[in-house]
Length: 196
Length: 196
DNA sequence: GTCGGGACTAGAACGTGTTCTAGTCTTGGC
DNA sequence: GCCAAGACTAGAACACGTTCTAGTCCCGAC
Image (cartoon, rainbow over all chains, first blue to last red; front, side, top):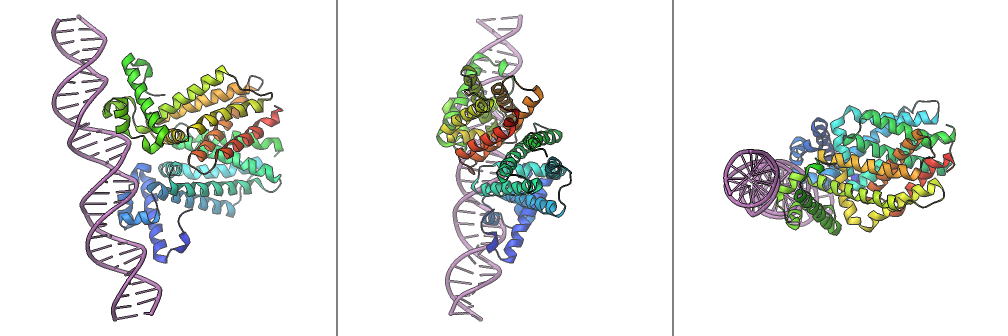
């Protein structure tokens, strides 16, 4: 995800946490533009330069925050598995949960997704991590009754649709209902043939 | 696409063209970061402020350039329709042509796609235009032998996958072969059930 | 304990996208 | 032909991400 989270001392890990928290707070209230590095520093009680010791850029910082977010989602889905009789329902349920979480914090979502899209060395590893997590979640929702090869293909395709629809929502060219629709459509197109 | 391209005088349209051309040149040689507004202005023989009369931001400018690019693609595909015996083949062919064009100009693609992803009022309209164009192209490739409702759904889903895979390539977390693979996978998942 | 290295701090400095200003040039309506 | 409106120009000014500097603090090795 990013440089050696494991090799930090306790106080360093705490500092890193405080920085992320500050960024999340600012992002939640005003979106991407409101996350200004000087403010993050002040609000986290840390010098500006110190942030850059932990994150290579503003985008890296916000992307790292999104990584934590998706990890939370994965944990929650693990604790309370997706509801639904058919596989299609379960997948829909998981995707809906993911989007609902973002719907509650639209400004913050805009901030983290924007960062995630940035071409930035630091952000790139977070992109992979988010994508991997989402793939795991989807894969679990699909269950074990599938040809593994098909499973991989289906999760990838659904992941792409989720990602792309999300961008559409964040950038304001489609409402959240549309995102839900597109996800449902794709889910059915991909899975129904398997008689889920 | 952007503010009233239709209401420009001849010389204004020419100026706008020169600006886009300058941006494309710079982008082709050095990617997003190399497209610097002062350089674009100089290179287009125009004052910096003038660019902002035509485009609301750097991202809007580059996104507008991508709109032209996709229009070109649509025209080319219209002139030489996609090859292939099966529908799946034709769709693959179209998608491949789209990605090959970008593969030839990786730096420029990075610039244009990065801009397209930006949350920016000006860029947003370009995003819709690109998406609409891509949908039309895919729709034509699919042909008229489908239930129209299915057609709409399939093109949307494939469009999402194309978009998302493209981002993956531009941001460097997957090679171009992988993009091709993912597109093929999605194409088969979505279309094969229709016995194409 | 103390010494050395690295992490932290405050703040200046820099680069580039964007906006502003003041003045000039173009153009369409009369 | 002339005039007002508004488009264009050069360049300064501004905002914010990022980097740099100089000095201080902390911590592990001895």
